[in-house]
Image (cartoon, rainbow, N blue to C red; front, side, top):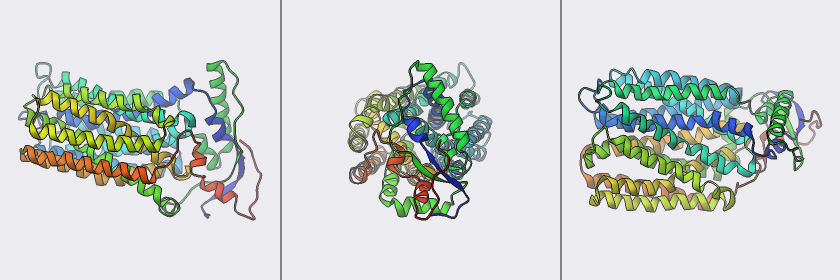
Amino acid sequence: MSTSAQTGTITTRVPARLDRLPWSRFHWRVVLGLGGVWVLDGLEVTMVGNVSARLTEKGSGIELDPAQIGVAAAIYITGACVGALFFGHLTDRFGRRNLFMLTLAVYLVATVATAFAFAPWYFFVARFFTGAGIGGEYAAINSAIDELIPARVRGRVDLIINGTYWLGSAAGAAGALVLLNTSNFPANVGWRFAFGIGAILGIFVLLVRRNVPESPRWLFIHGRDEEAERIVREIEDDVESSTGQPLPEPQGEPLKIRQRQSISLLEIAKVAFVLYPRRAVLGLALFIGQAFLYNGVTFNLGTLLSGFYAVPSGKVPLFFILWALSNFAGPLLLGKLFDTVGRKPMITATYIGSAVAVVALAVVFGTNTGGPWTFIAVLAVAFFVASAGASAAYLTVSEIFPMETRALAIAFFYAVGTAIGGISGPLLFGQLISSGQRDLVVWSFVIGAIVMAIAGLVELWLGVAAEQRPLEELALPLTVADAEEPGEPGGGATS
């Protein structure tokens, strides 16, 4: 299939050995060390929403207007898209572990720089590089998680990990509730400390992450099968030690793999759009739908509450906490159904169901029914459903493409889908909120509902039944196809 640098042909049972493992303390290390990125992302994205009202006030030390808050959000998302593509390619080429350490370092430096913002342009630059670090994390982290978590629980674990984004949101909002209180900190200081929270959490994640190994699946494809064997054996020993039970024999036939040190970007693009065009359409639809609605609301909720419900800037984080917790509850309570009822029916139901709830939200907002607490209550219901579907978008693209392209596939669909939905959403919401006209803002909710509903229909049409199936069954690795070409040597090492 390819003339990319090849090393040899091996037969491996590494995927089956990893998939048959019972849940253990090793998997908890993976969840804590790698899933922490979602906490950081939730903290960063909603931090701007939490402090946005303060940043528009005189005496804040920066004094942005509502439209610039939307611009800052769009710039952050642009950085995330660029970072996802750039670091995503490096992740597939140089390994999951190398990149999830590098991207976290980029994030830490940039988020500290944000705390020292003194002018809009500086704030925008710092937000771009913060987004780049987080975007790079998406590709490295999601690919590593899916390659280390057993197939039978991959769906619920992935959704819950992605859902921890909202724990970060709640933590950031709770911190902002204290830091934005002018009786505790001056108006031009508290919001700076708020961004410092992200750096503190990032250091904790970095410490835990040091104990997470490289993906054995990535290693054996890139000619490092002895290292892959060693890591899997160490994982197996650790699991047996923690559970006190012998491991069952791995199921299924071994994979015959032709190892390659690198795979070209052109070949990766062909895989997505020539070999799996229907899956490419599916990935784009899911990402565009959730990115438009989520980023539009998240980045502008603070200014919306202050401008239309007269909620003081210091009280805005309280509403964020309630909203964030409802978003985390969605994947937590619904996640298991994605492994039992199935991916296709659950993703369809969550996308279309959230669209219906957002229409109800538009009615509540447009008629000014019940004040801010009623608005937040309906918003919480809508996003309880939407959050499970949004998390499933990342799960979908991380498991339906071949292993050699996994990180860049995540990066590509995140970048393109988010560039279309995640940039246009905040800009549209920001501009309509700046108009001060309630009836115009209603249209932003209606458009968000329409985009989500369309994505749900695309899932109904093109969705893949990936529940409890090995990754290699969903999409055969490209190196397997190479190894099975006629006339090629077989045999080799077994790992």
